[in-house]
Image 1 (tube, rainbow, N blue to C red):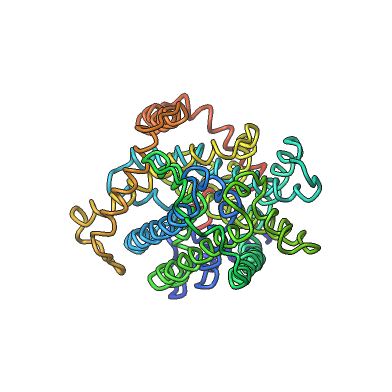
Image 2: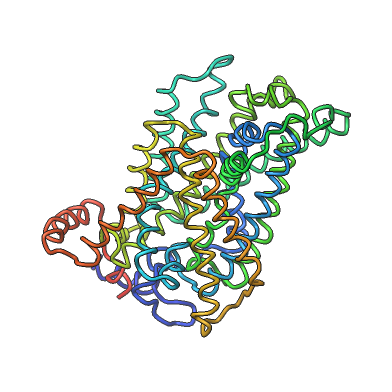
Length: 493
């Protein structure tokens, strides 16, 4: 009786509004139909972009360019690049309305191998390192008030980061709606801290605190390498501009809401970032900002006095909201890769009771905890940015390629071809500039790691050796029983 009613409820959930059955290969079945509207879409973009970056990156951007003027210029340029990139992704997202972000675009344009390498790099490098950086930043700010005048012990930071990862993983595994509501609440909280810092800066400017903006390009150190690394850190703060594309299939009216969310969300973030940086420089010289352990905390101590505890509290909310957004969308990427047979099948399974991609989200949480062990945020940011811009560039190149090879595709949003050309060229510069001007082994390791996915692809995806299936099948069966998950095909029947 219970099984029959459960099956009936699933069948009802797997019908679209016009009564058509959802195909077994589409992930709405696991995500309780299309539940993400325009407001939630804007919150997802703003909530994921404004996270740890604006509270960590100002110091690194300034360290690379050396002066206030170039620093603010880099922040504005990063905002323009993120907007142009997001417009490219808006065309891609509405032309190929499938979840999984860059994965289906690379699959359509270049075939399975680049798509597999993207899922391989995302699964084991890009997404976990991003999640780890954000949670480490959260832990630094959350523990800062308890250690005034000194740095918190690394063990405390890592334990706090691990606890945050576990909580976020559990929330997103239990309920899509709970994760979405948490995202909306945390977005509201982070906009409060952004407003506090930005408004304080405007008031201080009005009071004549402009001495740090005089001769703002003096002592700047500009080179191809320094600009490239400054962009890496600035773009880390903007990363998330493409997150809505990971949940395209879950958007209500995506042809309208995807571009609107981008057009409203990213310029809003750009204005906030420039205002926040101006606010920092109203009360800190370049030298003071570089010496600060937590820039926003220093700002709060100098401007808010007795209420300075508000800043680390709300920065903690901000970073945890960004981590929640990353976890919410990252699970969908593994889901799609597993569905295509490019990852372990169990990672594409969904919870019987919760209809969430629980195995994928739990896997991400486990990998991310491994990444917090080294705990070097700056190295992780450079490593992450180098890898991610390889695939951003390839995805935008896919848009250009499909303009010529897939002319039959309907394009509800069609941007001028010059925009993807510009973004592709900038991506090439961002990837090559640090390698040529300041080569590091980390970049070589990153390229080798991505290419090592080819070995996995040939052995397990292309040839599909039987011995590997004999090992994976019992593991899959036991995990299925433990986590109460099933393949999406069974849910959609």
